[in-house]
Length: 150
Image (cartoon, rainbow, N blue to C red):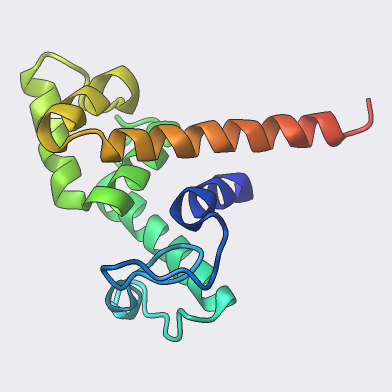
């Protein structure tokens, strides 16, 4: 769904292609050129808008299929975990899920489960990141529904 991508891009950059982070992430999707160049993404010139979006999308798909495609994880939670991994890295999400399980929470559910472990493990940044994208996505869906003729 393109609204999930737009919501993520809004969280990452406010939809500003000219943005560059102190860590070197560039563009709308705030992707590192090294991540984009990785064999699993393989997109160059991410300073260009189309390439930036393509690289961010391809990296999100890689994260979901490589790390979170277990059928025990609902498609919705696969996206939440992928957003968390985009922000904090897949190794950190693996640690979050393990901690959630140790805490007696569901390691396959982000909200009110793994996000609790994330907050304990690395602080609030990734928790807020996923929550904000979900909020923006919900708003985009409502705007689309309200724009359709009844």
